Image (cartoon, rainbow, N blue to C red; front, side, top):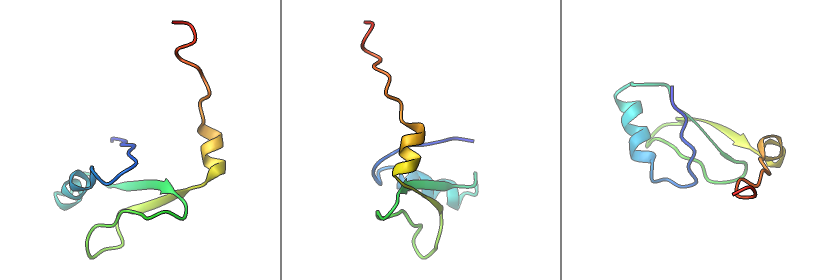
Length: 68
């Protein structure tokens, strides 16, 4: 299993290869009401829409540079 977090479509060729070679099940997530990724001619990969509430649940406000 792998998880990729990306804000753009640069990784789409890699996702298409994983799909075409049937190496793994692929699902993606993105902000609600934004364009989503599709494999050409399909309704795949499965898409999870995220909203502000989702962001608030996982937001990390830690200042990792504070104690440097």
